[in-house]
Image 1 (cartoon, protein in one colour):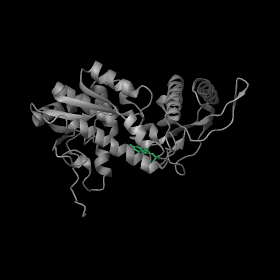
Image 2: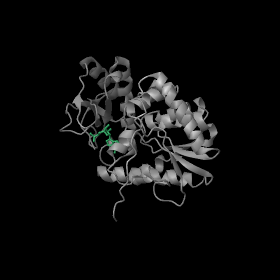
Image 3: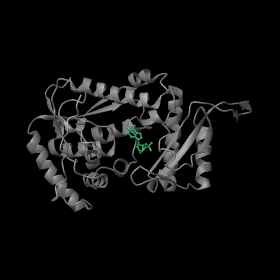
Image 4: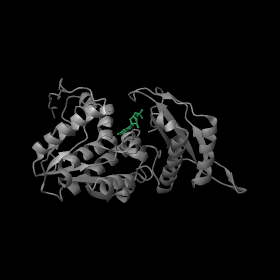
Length: 333
Ligand code: XMP
């Protein structure tokens, strides 16, 4: 099928680069008015992943139209520890949002069982996500708008061919046409963060590191099993806690654990103890196209190793990945 060329929207020259709380407030006031004018008394649906972009859009929409916004948070079972709980706590309890929480863990993990190929895993996760979201959307036929956290790099980096953030309707073409609401589509990531702060979102949300859509799915290497996924989630939580404690969380762009699907021999309490290795990766980058390795003090590495091997069931070694990008991509899969 011939691809339909589209003209990319261009950031208005009048939009000053948002670097201060004052400029953010001006942007927020303008967007609140624009959203109210666009939406009127109708309802807006938004997939709220808990990432920076969708969270800032949710907060803007809540400010503009309150309960006319319906947020849907899909837990694919591949979130970091306590992530879904954090989304519910902040938006449902903190901002009194209309929030539907869908725990689709079993759907995703059942589909992924036995699938080892990284690209197939990504495809399954992406397609199932759209399915779960669309099923929920179709229950709300009164909704006329779809909120999206499209940001300017998404537009600049798209290949000029219709992508789902350029068109109305549900992503898989269901017979429910929704008009898009994309209030941050002309902003760069750093500006989205300034706006998020001005909206009162906490640093734990606004300054969070990038997290791939398929989540821990691409860090539980090979075919995902529930026990190894759980070990990965716990080890990752320890890494984050220790990076917070020593201040590295503020300077490192992305840091995480991957767990491969093989075991090595170890010894625990005088007995043979086979376990998986936990691989630490901590990188700095500007645009994720290349990345350098962050130096981690040995004392911190020893502490992390000690905690992971003692606290996480199934892990008996901790290793450090020293590979820059190129040659290693940031994620192992
Ligand atoms: P790589 O591994 O390609 O990663 O060096 C570059 C950046 O992209 C993130 N990443 C993804 N993000 N879906 C996403 O939304 C994906 O499938 C995906 N794979 C990698 C990665 O975490 C890093 O920040």
